Amino acid sequence: MLLGVHCSIRGGLQNAFQESRSLGIDTFQIFTKNQRQWKEKTIVNDEKALFINGFKGSDVKVAFSHTAYLINLASNDDELWKRSVTALIHEIERCSELGLMFTVLHPGSAKALGERDGIKKIVKALKAVVHGTKNLPVQIALENTAGQGSSVGSRFEHLRQIIDGVGATRLGICFDTCHAFAAGYDIRTLCGIESTMEDLDRIVGLKALCALHLNDSKGDLGSHLDRHEHIGKGKLGLEPFRYIMNKFSLIPKVIETPKDNNMDGVNLNVLRELIKT
Image (cartoon, rainbow, N blue to C red; front, side, top):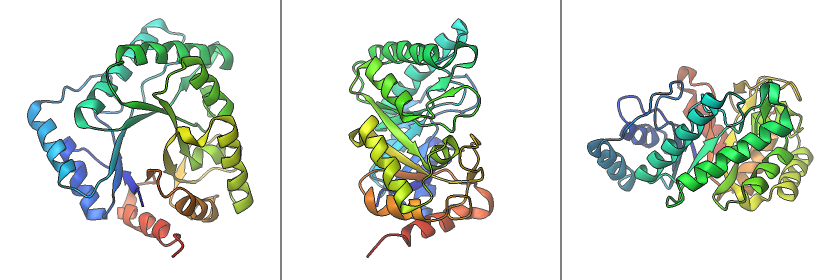
């Protein structure tokens, strides 16, 4: 099924496997460090061994990370840009140590630079990162964004331009349902989600699809509001999730829905019940 959640690493990276067991999932996403701080994390041998052994002893088939939120590869601030490049390199190094397949990355916020020049800065940054980690197998999955503020990545064409500009086989994509809807892709109906995925295939290529973030949306179509809602409880309804659960069984799928009241299990069951038998 390759379905899971974003697991907590509170108390140690290896604790993600406790959560995965309690939820009966075979896929998860984690932060490898505090996602809201620049301070880097060095994975000591004991923690690395606990994580790797936990992986081997679990039912988890795919695990991957999400980069820290502070990273902005589109920044026109040279210090922030350099810091972001270094942080992404360290993220990839941690993923390699832990045996994680890829890391999910928000492309960046261009602000005063504008979309065109922002994409150029992202390409330059990713070239430096790919070169700086050339001996590591970890992929970078660019996540489509809701288009809030000056963020790059709300259109599939942005992702295509970045991938083409970098020209590296280690780049892929992560498709977020909430972000796509908020960016203006109407995926509420079967026709809508089919058409959107056809566009994604035509513009970027589904062969580049590393993961899917399954989140309902609090915001309306084209609102650019990045606010996740429980599955079937937002503006999307169940149809896009039904399509994805049956069409993309071999692609890792993770929910990033609100963590209130132990709702992860409820959301997972909703998605499981959508699978055609």
